[in-house]
Image 1 (tube, rainbow, N blue to C red):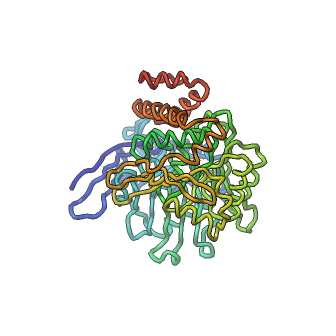
Image 2: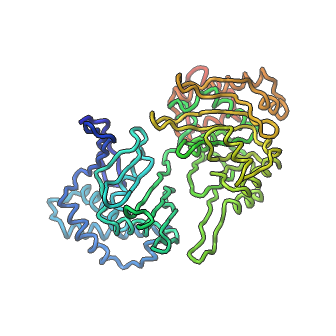
Image 3: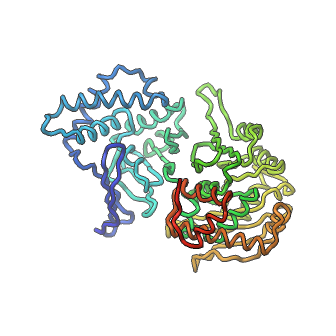
Amino acid sequence: MTVLATYTFHSESVPVQVTIRREKREFVPHYEIKVPGIGLGTKTIIETKLKAELLSMMDIDLTELLDVKRAKEIQEKFYKAAVRLLKKSFSSEELTEEKIDILATYLIQHTIGLGDLDILLADDQLEEIVINGPQEAVWIFHKKFGWCITNLKMKDDEEIYNYASLIARKIGRQINVLNPLLDAHLYTGDRVNATLFPISSTGNTITIRKFSRNPWTVTNMISTGTITSDVMALIWLMMQNELSLLISGGTGSGKTSFLNAIAGFIPANQRVISIEDTRELTLPRYLQWVPLVTREPNPEGKGEVTMLDLLVNSLRMRPDRIIVGEVRKQREAEVMFEAMHTGHSVYATLHADNAEQTITRLTTPPINLPKEVLDALAGIVVQFRHRRYNIRRTLEFAEVHKNGKLHMLYRWDSKKDTLPQVNSLSRTADLLNLYAGMTEKEIQADIDEKTLILDWMVKKKYFGIDEVGHIISTYYNYPEEVVGAAEKNKSWVFE
């Protein structure tokens, strides 16, 4: 056995220890969680006896439990009742104030929460939590070690169904024999998909895509080798001058993370409207940002708010920048490109494996846009996930010319793991000259200056979204201060 990593975190008040190990001749690592201070006997008492007693003590209607707005109030009521119950069930010698807090939180998680799934959701190192049925352990996708099998297991299909049903009811949805598929989200923003037997023939399933609590920033991406500082500096220059960009890539390639990161380049004196199916974006607090989210229809088929509805509505909100989580349909794409043509800067994601496929997807069914409209788009950035090495890279960065013709600027070299420039700026240079009066020499000088700032931020480990946002916003208003700090390698004072 080889121990790959050990670390600790807290799930609310509950301390959690994680050990990731690889057994000899096994194909995937084991992810083991342990809650110090809660032994097997205590767990058994909580799950078989105290859960039922706690629920019987609480005079709360089911609708109150499902009311997200009252979640904090309900949690406090349950916490006080849980403390009383624990003091009655265990001797005072066994319980310190700290242990009462831990046990009360653990009891509530297993009574009105998602049980052990709540613990996994608190681990910032996880991207995905997967239940494939009661016959096997829960799986997770770890940011560093990829797919791992855990030491957690669901008791039966009914337990999995109860968790899926709880998630569905909290957003006014249902999952049952007649509606065996569920796409939903937790109040934290985590996306949930659930299926019921016999649609999933091995049993009920739940898949949770975790929402990043600490969103990636441009400095994170440079420091991990996802992209180079000079390419990011060019993107910064383009966004500063309101040129529209499309981020494409395959599933799990980091499209949304990249979009979130570059949104930090938007000046603070501009209004940003974001449109998503599920809230995933987190922008710096310095921005004037209005996040909009779609809504599914209710069980009677009423009340749906689509991406198109929000996109059309956003044009009436005087936006300077529009961010679209993902473009899937023709009408969405038409309105998005119409917004570009009417002077709005638009940034969006699209499923496609490379720049050429991005153009193909845009110009063939079901999206089927005429090639003549594509020149409203300045560039396409393609993100790529190398599953074998568990790394994400910027695969391509291409300009979009007339009729959707591509001019490749940068392409990833997989052998050297570098992102070399393959062609000089063409249309981008023309646009920057047209809109900002910049010569080629001035463009290069600006890119060099921004590269210096990005490298300095990485060196100083300024990775927080508000840290990066503060420096960029200051640069737009007082560039000499930021450039001076970068040149002298001085630490930045965050006010």
